[in-house]
Image (cartoon, rainbow over all chains, first blue to last red; front, top):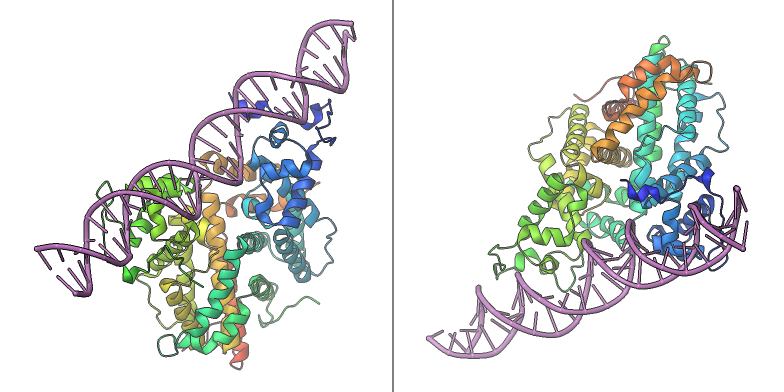
Length: 248
Length: 248
DNA sequence: ACCTTATGTCAACAGCGTTGACCTGTTAAG
DNA sequence: CTTAACAGGTCAACGCTGTTGACATAAGGT
């Protein structure tokens, strides 16, 4: 059966470029670009089939000639995102700085398009950009001196941490504005007002909590992970004090 | 803020328990329990107001007497999950072991209800169980000797990392079985077969990759975070070797 | 010029969250 | 014991969503 996928024609087989009523000539690329524009300009909720059709100047159902369903469209968007994120990145030779930069990029890239990030961050695509990233990161770690099993363990923790935080932070960014404001308010209105006798630790740190919980914890968590990895490397390569980075 | 809309009566003020047409007596607890059952048995898509009403033997709109909207309900579900996770846990005095155990519990708890975890792990509920958890973890860190700003920073990184990995791993666990198998296969079928001349680092570590990528990276990431925190503590409290816990 | 068919359009469907109006049983006050 | 208030369950309806089958039409090969 797969009656739905029958509708979709592989890109290479498309020949008859027929303009829509409003004169636009559709294509996969144009649809993905428009979807990204919609996400960026009008928020996560703006991405519906109907609105996308409207933005394209085409009937919503025309999209189903190009994508099986909205999930298929989202994966295409995600793939485009990966490409953009890694576009200009090249390793510098300082493993710790390289991984830090890479992690922050992935995180920032996800926050730029939270909706797509939320739905795709936990998928293994096996596509070109992903493979390139794996190869590069492993190269950085092995080049730094990590033995293979350790390099793989740290690679895994590093990548999944980046993706997990990206999804987490993207998810709260993708909330409807009302809900997002409500969450921010909870820390000020609720946690900052708990009495010291019932909740001494929250009361003692309330000021710091309100400030700190506004930003993402990813930079902190990333630095902690890299610190621990550096300490581990020092141990392995023959015995620093396990405290500071060794590189440079 | 939890400004309950006009329709919602705070639980304490409920007095007239009137049975539904089918004889069920509704309550916040019953609704949350039923929602968790629905999620567990029929997946994340099964949780709709209408289906929940059906499962309860009540009109869907009756739920709006108890929860402002579906988001409010979701937060209640999330808080219930937190409560169940922390039910039997008590700090032992060894801060590092305590946090490790706690992190693993949150992770395991999420995997037990992947669908609920996926929907709620990134929310701030501001409800009883969550507040209790915050208070406890902050207590562990401050008791260990972290000064307040540092305790808050590490609290934030620790909690968000636990939640982020929980959501990430829950998400892939919540995939339809076919899709999950497909993703697992990618590592064996694709990455393990890349030629050494084009992808030397992947080829060199392929054996480790295939093994390591099957399990969650969370335990590794957690230990790295705790190691770095311990090193930080040693620095602050004036100098151990930065390697082991100092407490006691 | 003709026929095939890719592709855009249209109308319709089922399901979603949510709400306002209605009805009815419970409960507190007199 | 009566009664009036009202919490809470029910019903019908709204506007939104993704998706599809039927239809129309223009492009392209022959």
